[in-house]
Amino acid sequence: MKKFKKIASLVLAASMMAAMPVSMATTMVAYADETSSFTLTLNNTTVGHKYAVYQIFTGDVSGTDTKTLSNVKYGANYGGKTAGDEVPFTELSAITDADAFASSVSLTGDPVKTVDSAAGTTEITGLVPGYYLVVETTASVDVPQGETETKNILQIVGNTNVAIKSGTTTSEKKVKDVNDSVKDSLTGWQDSADYDIGDDVPFELKATVASDYANYALYDNNYVLTFHDEQSDGLSFNNDVTVYVDGNKIESGYQVVTGNDIGDNCDFEIRFSNLKDITSVKAGSVITVEYTSKLTGDAVVLGSTGNPNESYIEYSNKPGSDQTGETPHDKVIVFTYQLTANKIEKITNQDGTVTNQALKGAGFTLYKKNASGEYVAVGTEVKGDKMTTFSWKGVDDGDYKLVETTTPTGYNTMKDLEFKINATHDTTGANPTLIDLGTTTLDGKNASLFTGNVGTGILTGDIENTKGSQLPTTGGMGTTILYVAGAILVIAGAAVLVIKKRHEA
Image (cartoon, rainbow, N blue to C red; front, top):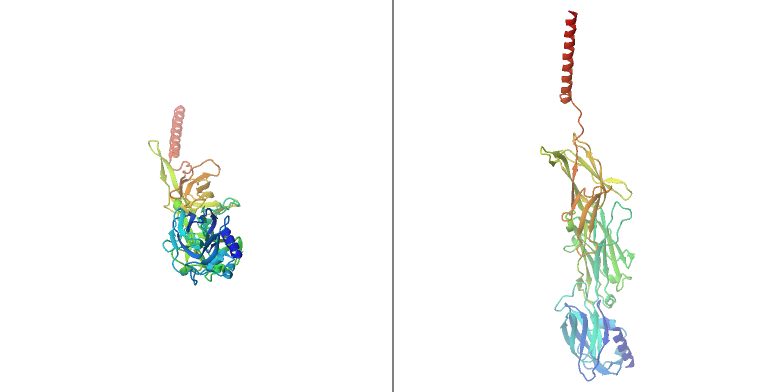
């Protein structure tokens, strides 16, 4: 019996928690030997749980400073045993691991108490001295997202407070950003980025394994963990997955699933059919998935709407069963923008006012500076005989040069325009938004060459052409002046000739 008392004390100190990612630290706060029943108070509870209390053992409270249970008998819910029969010492002495016992004990009959959780504290009253298994169930409500059902064994020898910290399986999704025009500009993992169409965008998925993970080893059931990833139409999965456990790369134990084998509203999955097969995984382990997706021509240019990418995790959330739960969805957004140049000529009206008139016949090529300082063409020349508006969809921040590679007949070629696209967006928000969009010229002389609209994601500006210089031509005013001068010379010559003949006569 001394050995059992020692075990019971150890169980009490360790809070005897088990079988789901939840830990309970028990603190005995009051005893009343003359009271035949006690109250168990669960602290830090949240709405959305249901607790069932099963009586495993009963007994008598003994001791003064340290309360223990003596004359231990089987309780009403110990499977295969008769309630009230004395528990053999050999059976008690075999209980050396509270978690293992809580996870493996068989139950019979209805629980002695059931209660729905409340916000803050939840009370369970009318418990006689003994050992009780407190099990979180989903009999009336679903387990909140990310959380797991709990199974805890507690010694009740007086009114008892238990501080509950619900264990959780967590997940998150992140993306990296880069400015192609700046060397070594790749950011850390964050919640938004902007890219050019055609770029490969790096993504990261993370899952933190629940704190009760070790309890699943007591059952033959698999521990399932699946990453579900849903991408917008503008992102195309490159199927280049790399997986890490606590920072160490693994090559097996998972499957990348695409096509018709995946669930609804999902583009691909990374499935761990049994996480227990990966020996390096433990409670609290972080499983990381890295991959890239290409930003395609279907990408959306619409300000803060951008191109979202969401993920969540499906995971085992009840030891000894195939039941699974889901984490909340986590979203990142990839932005891309459109540059639009309107070709114009300034016309001075008779009243002296100036208006912009659309000018046809031009062609432009857009160049982007890379990290080595070289300008690289963004696609091919954009031109058309009747075109007056020129657009480049799918550009991001960086340094650019706009070159007039076809000049309208009779007009001067525009000087190359060098400018920088600047964009600011949330990097840590749950629903990232585009904050600011605009341009500045690289020489700093024109801060508003193109005006950005954060609602549409479009940068727009007017590009002017001027007519070429004109010299006098045949039939113009210059020849008229020559004709008049010639006529005067002819008349003058004739007059001189007439005067000379008169003198000779």
